Length: 374
Image (cartoon, rainbow, N blue to C red; front, side, top):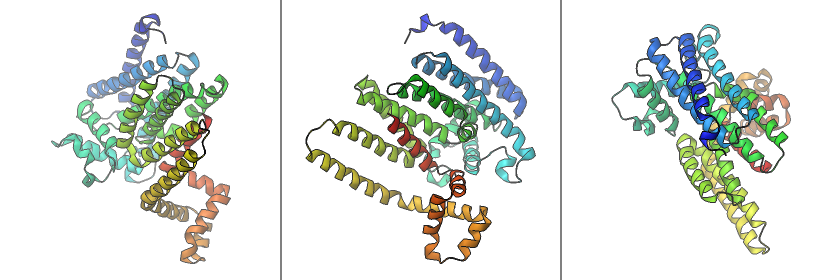
């Protein structure tokens, strides 16, 4: 990695300042929430912060032109969609509260509304971790949003500021993931992975919204990077430090995703390290401990998984007349196995399940797939 003075840092910084001012003016001018000057300043400041971090990470990852293009397209595409949704949904969306307010997802609508109310109150922002608020069971996203509103946008409710952070998080995931993939695969494989992240439809939609998934994907890619470097004994102290900090943030964003990811990371480390041992008994004991830990974790997450299944089964029934007909004709104790069987055997049902936004499954699958690539 070149020192900052050797790669025209001042030129890049000037470009970022100009782009941030353009984004602040353009977003505020199009969205038109509140007075122009405070909105312009808020949008410009948060854009500058995000772009500056993107610049540093891009430089750290090797300053490749293709990676820079990916990051800029990913960021710009999501910002454009975010502005379009905020403007368009009240005019062309469904007649419900969240879409009339410019939100795609109900949980984001409820959480951001609570964050705005908390930011406007005299309460400490640490109230975000109070379960009584009921819109963010982990507190991390609520704290971040309320902090942004209180510091940068006290005059008006501007959820587009959170969309800018989400877009930047998705963009930052690209160079980190590519840097990890290049350690084991060809540059062509890394480029394919990067472009998939840029244009993957659900990733574009989530990155344009005020959801926690973009931050979780970023945290997962950082987790993968740290574990990969630790396994290769490359910058071990840095890898351990990054892992601990990343994990602490992850637990605040979503502990129910962070804990399984820790388990997968531990399994990855165990598989790699145990393969170096010639003795059989440590491997047997290790796998028994892993199996026991898996059973304990499953029992811990079972109530939540049951709620997820019941809700998604309800949505499946509502969205399909044929499923509704079949449900009415089968006994109650056969409902769950039958819906699972249909989901596993029917491509249409699989597509429907994919649209139900099972956050735990999606993020854990992304982590496992990346571990497999390593």
